[in-house]
Length: 432
Image 1 (cartoon, helix red, strand yellow):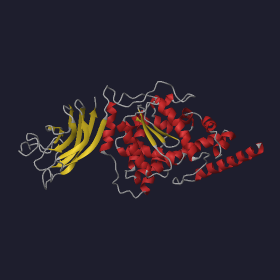
Image 2: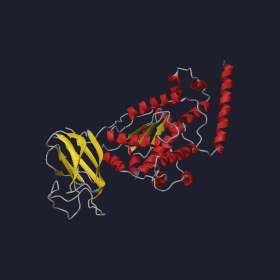
Image 3: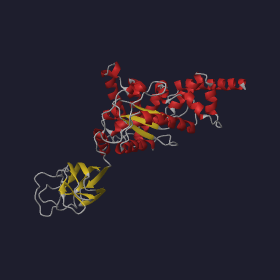
């Protein structure tokens, strides 16, 4: 039995050297392969173990709007990735650190500091695409496999490759806690290049401008030059960035049949970033605390709402086409509910004309007997609750509902039917 184990180790070692040598000469990052002792089932099980630790100790944001958006964007990219045999999960961490990372099995974490650095949705999509790329290529599991092999941990290797093994606890103990995973298992330069390549492909296939990944990298490079040693961005500690990597990314984009019409930003992204105004102040240096043998220091929390006593229970983003008379938002208000409404966009209120206005209406167009509110500007966004009286909303209004009923939105005009354009409206309700 002992001789058999030695033969297995020898074969695996030769295979490892062969794979490593091959990777040095192979630059085809579209190919997913390499040394990996772990099955998909084992990888997901390890990821769930790490995720359970992270959920308990990191200041995860559980605000519904933030969670829904980051998972919407992440899964939009996943639809175009090369690995869809697992379920991906995306989380936002309430820390000012600039970082993002993925653990095995499709669990991806993005820090608030990084999100706030992103100027548009395309840049955030680039970061998520890069992290998805690490999961697609199973980089973490390959690094762990090399660690086990180089360390001569034959028992861990034989357990990992045995389909009949039920000793998962022993495997995870050899793999270490999530603190070990994040601080000890470093991606190689080729891993980073491949994650860049896969992320660019995902962005392009999902309809985003792939240059947004490069603009984000440029931001990181400039930040690293300005930062002192103590303030070096966490993202660059876990994802070393080089000018050569940026040039490689630019070359990959040149190979694409890109028309230049990709998505850079969206209204949803702007509303998503606006949500952070309602959260507690972010923590600092979270990555440094994930370093002891247990993986964490104590004292972290997760957040689900705003920093004050109000718990906004409903948030909805809808569009109001220019030809709307009244539209039921589907939001039922109770007496005492606090409602906050923000609106943007343009409506062309005059037939066969380019004259247009924002939600506050068109200047110089007061009056009009047939308008819902005759004293308001034409094109102004207005509202009503149930069958109660009409009231002005404009680009912003915050009020307390005095009655019960559904919230309706409309456009103040004598004749809405030939209007073009639309308003984008975000409604936030605090139920007391």
